[in-house]
Amino acid sequence: MESKISIFSVVDVIESLSGGTLLNGNLCMMDDSPYGSSNQGTPNLCTLCYPGQTITWTILALDLQTPAAIRSITFIRPDGSVVSQPSVDSGNLESDELHLNVWSGIVPYYMVPGVEYRYRLELQMYEGKNSIMHVDTPSLKRI
Image (cartoon, rainbow, N blue to C red; front, top):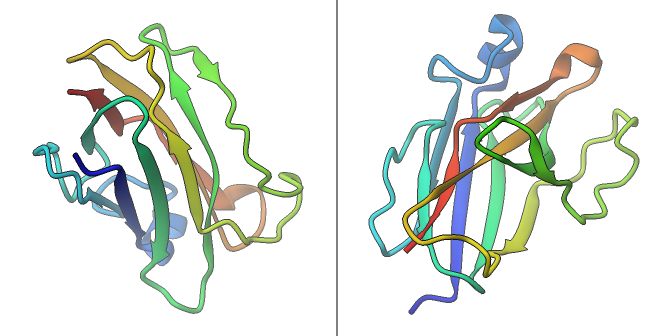
């Protein structure tokens, strides 16, 4: 079994900022899971994985002059509440400084096989209060 899965997120920064959303084709997510993940190329990516596996998220901006960074990744319960905050040193979250383009984590052993675990991918593009956006649609699914 492959011990690492990479998830790549490509964001159209200019369209996201002008439209105020990461949806409508502004965010494309794909992975290299060998297990047949679904919804490749959309913000609804469901990555198939197994416990103990390393998952690495990488953000890429289409507009090379406008930076984009992963601000946080948090997992969501079915009722919409947050499971846990990530234990990642992403610097001062109140800062406008963008520097986290890669985030890694380990698939937990408590995941139930066949259940989708949604997560919130929060991105920061450029500066200012309107530059922070998120999607709650991607998920991990234990095989």
